[in-house]
Length: 193
Image (cartoon, rainbow, N blue to C red):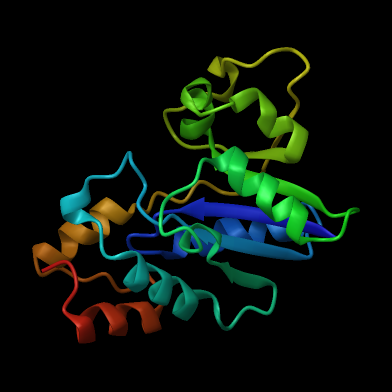
């Protein structure tokens, strides 16, 4: 089994996340994509971060129509955010021994990978798939020669959760940026206002 791991705060989840998930699933012939919702990411501003439960619910709504997408609540088991390497270790134990994990990250994250806890261990637990992002050159990544990465051909989707939140605050449309069901959930729950 080949499993893609797509983690994030998903605050809110948007069509860019879903496109990345589906594109990499097909490109690397993955069986499923796990959407790992960060419980309380330390690098995110807490005043703009919805509760973990609401972000989990929104993510579930966004992915429910795709049979290859699954919601993963691994960080919710301890009620705290886990380091990526620990998430990978836990997932590897959860699935059959011959399972191959593919960690999907943006090139912006790749450039900061040396700041991650036990970052060199990531390659012991997963193959690293990098999604190019505008302004973040993969060639500048601080990797050792033996640290192989797989660069995705996924189109660059310039949608950001922070822009979506600002649009909501400014009473502007978020149509075509998030799934219709997520837009309804945000509106019904009066989120980000």
